[in-house]
Image (tube, rainbow, N blue to C red):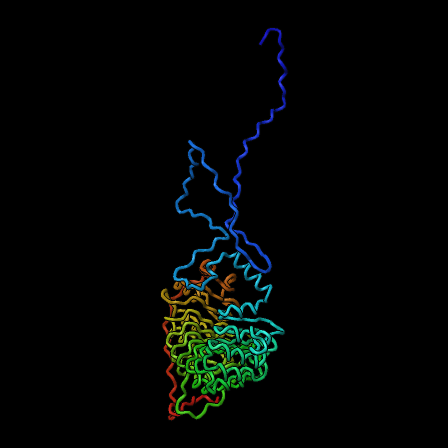
Length: 498
């Protein structure tokens, strides 16, 4: 610095820092294809990509960063997914890009409607309508009036579900039964059906029907009479449901006639239905249901089936896996021990309402548990007044190798010692309901789900000073009462008149 030159005072304000260099943003690559709609058509056009630039001499091409191992390039939304192996040649839905497929179907629905479009596809196998208050006959109409109706345009239809619909006519069901030779399933629960429509349908298509869902009503007896007459020899599932309220129309079920007419029946459900069996005919021997795997007679109105009815239904059902008798207070453990099924997996005997209370305290749940301890996965004893010792012997039947997963003991007299011993022996238990059990300590009287909640329940039981006891000895199964002479020859149950 020259002599005599003064220094400039330093500016106390901080100098602004220079802005960082802007990173170069790459332009997004043009799409591989463009969708355009014109005059009702959807076109797939190739994207407009610029030609590659000529490379200069002496300039090396840019090096690409290596892709990480296992990394895959994100597929384009317009690129069709890879076709699966062994794909049929007509599987066009798996080869088109998803946006293109959605626009094609959307344009077709806007032009023709959803139901006509489904009918034109001719590949429809499962069709369902829910809560249609009108228009059902227009969808299932006779072909001369509507050439694009479901009955004429879907020859591969195998399942028809009409839930809570109105105006289901006999002509519409008859058209479906006539023009759909592969129809095997019919669901009419909650629907208002014309009188005589279902029997007429069974007369046309009942020979190939395998599954049927119905609602209990004044015309259900005619449908059961048609089934008992042999209209559905291949029927495998039959469900009659009365809903949440009690059925105002008592139903008379021809048990022996159904056993003879439907030998392939595997699932029978009479849910909340007020019914009684028709008097047993004088047959040489009742055939029973040899293929039956599920029987559900659950009710919320009290009463239900008794010992005699249960024997008539299950006298030949050795393959039974699920037995649901919730609300059937008149079924005794002695009658259950007579059943021919040896590998029962689900047994539901719960009484979940005051109207289903048994007339007296039953005994015999221990014998039931010990008989099916090797196969039971779900056991429901809620609401029963079994004794404390009887329940303790029943819980002692399940050890470390037992397949038990769900146990419902709500409202029973189970002791905390027997319950803690069960939790220690059965680590595979996933659900336990001990609500309203007065003998248990606080904090445990609820439903426990999963290993964590079951472990907390066990900790509360052990913390309350309830030490597990040694399991009691298994009870002896009661001997079956002798049948009167001639009962086996006549095929009648000695208690059928009860």
